[in-house]
Image 1 (cartoon, rainbow, N blue to C red):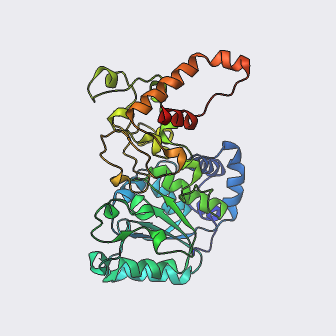
Image 2: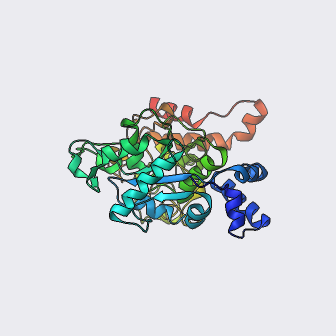
Image 3: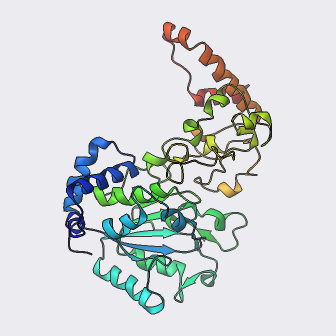
Length: 365
């Protein structure tokens, strides 16, 4: 592990105190933290050593790495060259062949018990020959590298939940990291691919606070996966009014109405797409006119057709259940009616029903 602290390293690179605080502000933004915590982050980084990071890629499409390279808070080059020591990564490293594997082995030996292991891609169990690196099966490389890791970050839905390779009929016997490694802390950063600043934000949190962020019941950072896309979506008011696009080119679609009937999985998908967005906060799929496909959830490839409206409970927790177009329309109309009576309810001191309660009412109706 590099012997100098991050603060010392940045000063050696010629970074001023003002630039350092700006860097800390970017980290706070990437971790979805209040700007008030910037001084605390700066203090922590002054004494923090740059951690060694080993990134393993298994059954994947390189989409997670492509996403990482598009992060802007912090940028990937700022993260790699200033914040962490990325000692092994198939796509981004300069070394190849024997030199590449030697770099991984050296990083494991020198930083045993302290390095962060990042994994993207699922692991095939049916046949070791389905995916190998330097003649080593994915399974063996994962087990070997995980032994000395302080924590593991499963980047992308393939590593977190099995993803596309695990979809029925799962010909390679693909499994997520957590099915194999059970004695290490694991953070699931799901998405196909994950949002760039969520990837770097999680790494920045570990770096800054020396531990894992608060996780949800699926092992994902609650700061980014704590609410459904539906809850944060700018089209939500149309859902509440019962206004839905029927086709992708009808008047409703042109007016930006809710895409629920066109298969949007936003109500059962937990991610920060609607707020953090993509391409430096430019847009996200729903804003571009396409419904959410639920890519940050387990088994999203087997939910049903991407353009079929939700018609049954998904098997997730109760708060994720949505019960079909008719019920969704009824729920939307019910919320709209409640909004009209909002002032009157406030006067009477009645508490507004939650969306969960309305969904249950929609199911019963």
